[in-house]
Amino acid sequence: MNKQAATGALMGLALGDALGFPTEFNDVPAILAKCGPWREMALPVTRGTAYITDDTQMTLAFARGLRTAMDSGLLTPHRLARPVRDEYVDWYHSPENNRAPGNTCLLACRLLDSDRRWQDASQIGSKGCGANMRVAPIGLVPGLSEEQRAGAAQLQAALTHGHPTGLAASDLTARAVWLLARGADPTGLVGQLRSYAYENRDRYHERWLGDLWTRSQDPDALHFARRGWDECLAVLERLDSVQRTADPELDPCTYTGDGWIAEEALATGLLCFLLFPGEPLTALRRAACTRGDSDSIAALAGAFAGAHLGADAWPAEWTARIEHRDELLALGALWDA
Image (tube, rainbow, N blue to C red; front, top):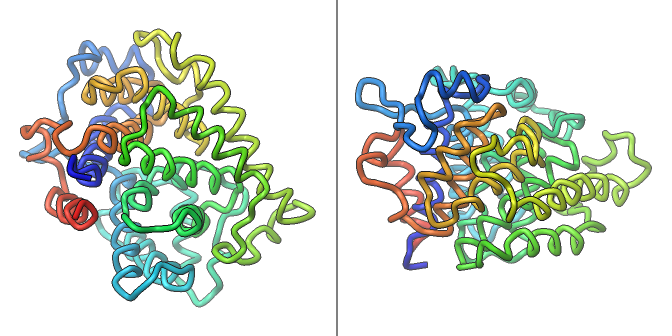
């Protein structure tokens, strides 16, 4: 990966997050009134720093937990769950955790801060985008099997968001990052993701998830898994039908949803990237100028663009100012090596 896909993806995620931070909870007319034309949006800088939200904070928490797990050997569910859980709880208690974090993450992390099993802390009814806004690192780590990547993507989501659609969307987000980092053609990406979803529709990762499904109303684990994949397939189908005809001047949320829920965050983040696969800053700006969960949509669009184009996608005057720059670069360098 000589293009430094890991560095590009992590930096793109943080830049998208920072760009979408001030526009979250605003509709497009309000954003245009505040920021001017969307294609010229500037990186918001306060006292020399472009501040990120809980999206990047939790991405870094997952990345640290993942690094700790892999430092002790092969990636297994047992090795991964404890350090990631500890990182999420540390994030919960951090004084920096004041960036409008999601209620599901807060509630689950409060419950994780105990001796209960993580499956009993997981919010089984929530498929908020917090499940997949932070999953990109597992798509960037070299040398994993498909089962390790999928299982880890779903486990990190399930620690807070136990809904099967949150698990499937996280798996798909990690898959998209992995494919792009390895040179997949963006024009065929949605087709590859749909195929992957069909292939995995009947798979419940019991080794990674344990008996999580029993907290749901589903009659069995297979029914639980299919429910999540089918919701993701529906939104991927919608994305497939509009990706070549969508008007880039129209709010992408019009086509694939507002992104507050996991499968819509995946689809709308992908749409913003696919509208401008060779123009990473334009993709970020389009994602940040949306009526929906703009920081999460732009964070995902940035991860996809950075995985595709590498570290050189982002201008130095932007990356120099991003909060947590040194840690983002260190993690990127670790996985690019």
